[in-house]
Length: 211
Image 1 (cartoon, rainbow, N blue to C red):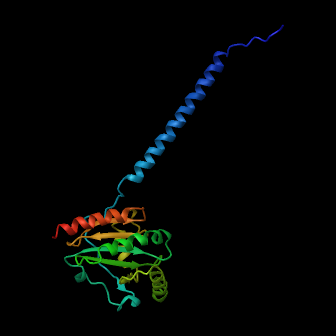
Image 2: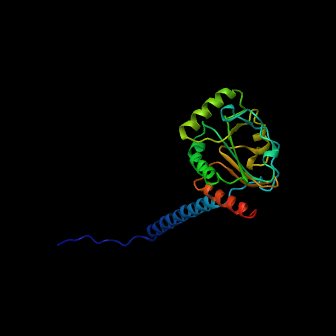
Image 3: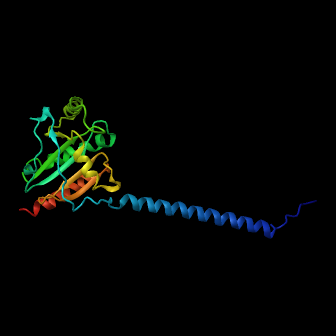
């Protein structure tokens, strides 16, 4: 009866197996580290140089279907908190966030110490205000949300704010909470689920200090 003798793996073969194993361990460790860094980045506060800065000059006008085409005056905000929300009907993240913004407005509907300034925007200067008003009116009617809504005709307000935001650019949506002293308390650029709830907590805290 014959049989075949199995030879033990050579030293070179064992070395190659060990190197491959170490490579897999290293690769797995790199993947885990990358995942941890991503989670840490998602959970960290967004960088903003806007907080603490005075609100720049405003050039906002009410869209005609929400009232007279009057400009927003700084006197309308004096001594109150002000929440500015810049959004557009063409912007998917804005549409995703808008119900949260509407809930925030509804929560503080009876509070006279805060002013909500909703600003409907196109992707650039509003050269066609009639078209902007038509699309804004249609969207607000669809979601059954009625709040005096403004436009930024020449994008002057957004240009001034962009200088205070990271990278010197203005993204959509952008939400700013401004204090009674006219300085920016919080700035949110882009949409992250749950940020409006965090903002509601901040508003409640600042309102409580005035009572």
